Length: 114
Image: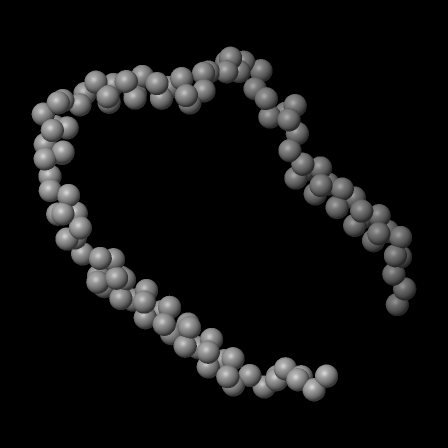
């Protein structure tokens, strides 16, 4: 059975070329004709928000935050005393243990006879 290889090669080349052309982003086609002018950046938008938040704070609220005992924050639960912390420690310990086990029981030994 003989196939005409040239026809398949041409068809394959046309298919690959069509895929490349369809996958290529064309900037001239992406632009809309009635696009508005660029708006100011994020920094220009953030300035009024920052000033609004800063002016909304009252002196009584900031004094109440300063009146809290700094030792109260130190008495909070440590991360490793929580359930998630215990799980993290167990996973790390298992990984370290497996690494040591794997290093001890490695079939490939370093060649010390040089």
